[in-house]
Image (cartoon, one colour):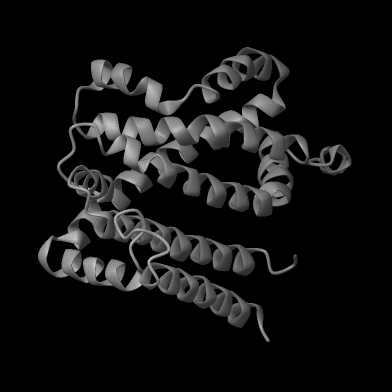
Length: 246
C-alpha cells in the first residue's frame, strides 16, 4: 500500500469514527457536529453566503503578509549570519519580539494602523517574520565553511559565493522553512480578522461562533485546513522538482 493510500485510509477512518460518535450521541452536536452536518453547512456557505469570496480575501491577506515577511527575513537573516555585528545588534531584539503573544499586540496594532487592511496584514506579518528570520540565519550558518574557502580559492567574488555556494546549499531547507512559516501565518488568521473585519474566513468563523452555529464554525476550520493542505502539497512538489538530487 502506497503512502497516499495510507493517508487517505487513515483520514477516512478518523472521519468515520467521528460520524459514528456524533450519531450515537456520545458528543453533543452543539460541541462537535457530525461530518455530514459540517458538509451540509459548508455547501450552504458556498451557495448562499459567498464563502468563496471570503476565502479569496483571506488567502490574499495571508500571501501579502507572508511574501512581505519572506522578502525581509531572507536578506536580513543572511546578513545576521554573515556579519557578526549585524547578528549581535538584531538577534536579541528579534528573540525578544518573537516571544511576544500576537493577540496582546492587537490593541497597539489598532492604535498604529487603525482598523483597516494594514492592521490585519501587520498582525499576520508579525506572526511570521520574526520566526522566519531566525530560521534563515540558522540555515546560513550551516553552510560548510570549507565550501566558501574553496570558492574563494578559485577566485569567486562575494556575490558568487552567496549565489553559487550559500544559496544553493541552503535552498532545500529554505523552501522547507518557508513552507512551515506559511502554515504559521495561517494560524494567525482568526486573530487578524476579528479586528473590525467584515470579510474573510476568520470573520465567518467568528460570526458563526457568536450565534453558536457550530457546523459553520467547523466548516470554516475545515476550509482553512484544506487550503493549508493543498498549499503544503504544492510546495512539497516544488521542493522535489527544484532539488531532484536530494
